Amino acid sequence: MSVPRRRRRLPDEVRSAAVRAVLCLAFTLVGVVVATLASYAGSWLMTPALLAMGLGVFGTMWCLLEILISRQVAAQRMRGPNSASPMEGSRVAPEPLAARPFPRSGGTPPPHRQQRPQPQQPQPYPPQQPYQHRRPTGQQYGS
Image 1 (tube, helix red, strand yellow):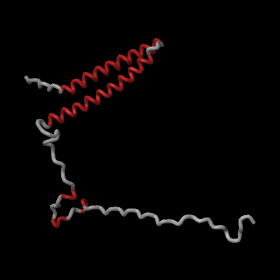
Image 2 (cartoon, one colour; image 1 turned 60 degrees about the vertical axis):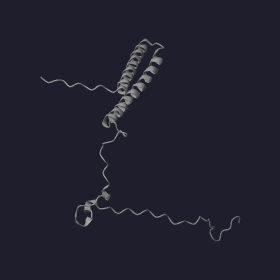
Image 3 (cartoon, helix red, strand yellow; image 1 turned 180 degrees about the vertical axis):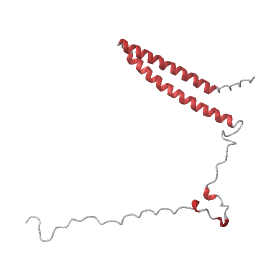
Image 4 (cartoon, helix red, strand yellow; image 1 turned 120 degrees about the vertical axis):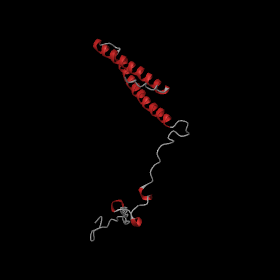
C-alpha cells in the first residue's frame, strides 16, 4: 500500500493572495446575481450592481496576477536558500559564439558559422541647389 505524499504548505504571501482572490471572486459573483435579478425586475439597483460587478472583475484579475507574482517570488526564494542573490547557483550564461575558439584545424569557423558581410550603409543624397524660378525668354511681365 502506497503512502500518499503530503503537499507542501503554501507560503504566507501566496496564501493571503489566494484568499483575497476568492473574496474578490465572491464579490463579483454577488454583483452578477444582483445585476441579473435587478434587470429582470427593472429596478434602479441594476446600475450600482453593474458598477460593482465591473470593479469585482478588475479586482479579481488583479488578485490573480498577485497570486502568480507571489508564487514566482516564493519559488525564487526556495531556489537560493541563505544566498545573497535569489539566482545564486543557477547556470552561467554561455559566452557568445564569436568568442569561442573553433576546434577545427586552422581556427577558422565552418562555412555555416562564418560572419556574414555587413550591408553597406546608404549614402546620403548630394545636396541640391534651391529651386530658382526662371522666366521664359521673350516674355515680359506686365506687357
